[in-house]
Length: 93
Image 1: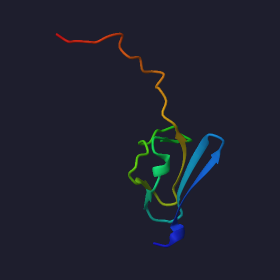
Image 2: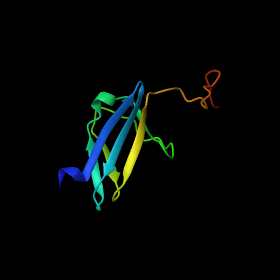
Image 3: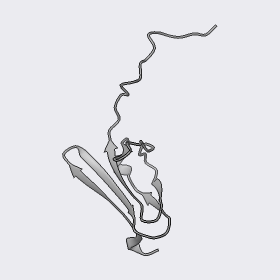
Image 4: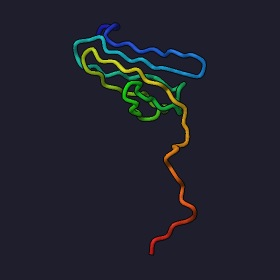
């Protein structure tokens, strides 16, 4: 596969980080990204706000359709404001 069929890069401004992954080919491509330095972040697609799996030590795999691209905000973990922990232990009888 020619080198220029797939591109990925990271843009930063202050604390904000955007990962761009693009498929420049007319064929489906699989991207295997080394995001180890970004471990613990969660990629969130910018247009639809869809959350992707968290980044870990393992290579990050993505599949892209022909001429497809993703713009992903890399968010740090934060508490879910909708989650309410139970007041105390719950037991079912």
